[in-house]
Length: 379
Image 1 (spheres, rainbow, N blue to C red):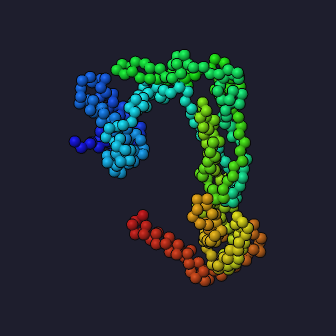
Image 2: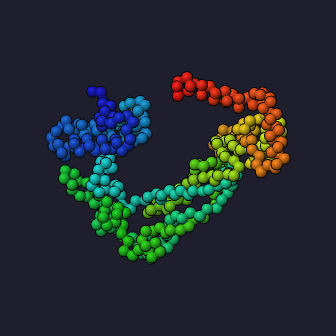
Image 3: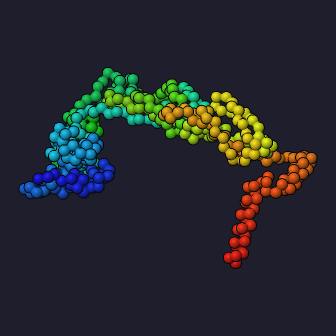
């Protein structure tokens, strides 16, 4: 008999989240579990089918193989586990129902846990981000207690086996149809108790400290980039490995430049005379100055591209460009003579008709046509 589609078995879509898959299996397991349906072979078969589907779809690697090749692909990738749900079902069952009955992880005594990852927000200037730098940061974190060596027990003493769970870390309780394990309420799953807690760490085995680190910032980073410092996070528990530290880069606004990808943008004010007659001026770039030629009759807002004067990103993609947008500056604080000269200049411009100001006359023609249309429609 052909195997049913695993998504169909659990009643979920192919893009269902891991949490949705878990809830679907929980619902089916509660309904078809053999303990709730004694002697019902059909319910037992449905339970096993749901268990096999969950075993595959709850594992990202198995699910990827199943999505691509179906049952045959899963069987080949996992050595034939696909049809029978060959994983340890007690582990699966506890993962699914542990949160209902108070479980907090599988039995196994004093387990080691990896420390938490940390994040540090680092503000950089644009120059530091573009050219790279080395900074010293201080990060509040937790470290293994030196006084007790991370055991949590006062020096000269040792943790003892928990008398409630006998060092297992879990106790078994009966809940209706099910007999399940839950975390030991006395040792909280460690399997150990500490009669004489360490005075330095209060029995936790970890202490708060300030960690000073030298961080090398590679050239070309940008806001949103993260630098991973392996093992510089919080200390692990019960001898577990430490977490990692992620340095989150934020580039501060610059007074001249704005970065867009690998390009740098800046605005360059120019005089009316330079815009009309043309000229050459020096504009800044991050590694010095560069000459920018302004052709005659340049309009305000015109953008010029200086190739290779941008940024080389840490992610690659070549060197960006410097984009200079010119803004024609209206003169202010004019003298009486300057005002008279401008009036004479404006009169001479008017005599030239549309030849000197084609955009202005084109706009005026558009305005005239607009009002004529309003008259036509009786507005």
